[in-house]
Amino acid sequence: MKKEIEAVLEQRVRPMLRSHGGDIEALSLENGVLRVRLLGHCSNCPSAVYTTEQLVQQEVCDAVPQVQRVLLEQDVSDDLWMQAKALLRHG
Image (cartoon, rainbow, N blue to C red; front, side, top):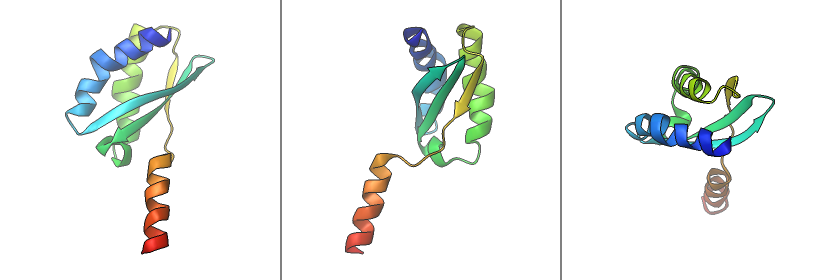
């Protein structure tokens, strides 16, 4: 099922996100709930939740019936934490 999800993301979701300078990462799938993280410009977009509900969830759930819901994880990436720490140490 992971390959099916990744194929949907690659073919139907990523092209739209990339046109806005973003991307998507599938984090986990448990009990029919796919958790994703938006990357790039999409990660801080005010429309991130709307994008997840209207684009990602619709495309993934239509193509992979075992996925019933898509949830957006809105945490800070490890890379961003490292950049922030470096700035604070030397700033």
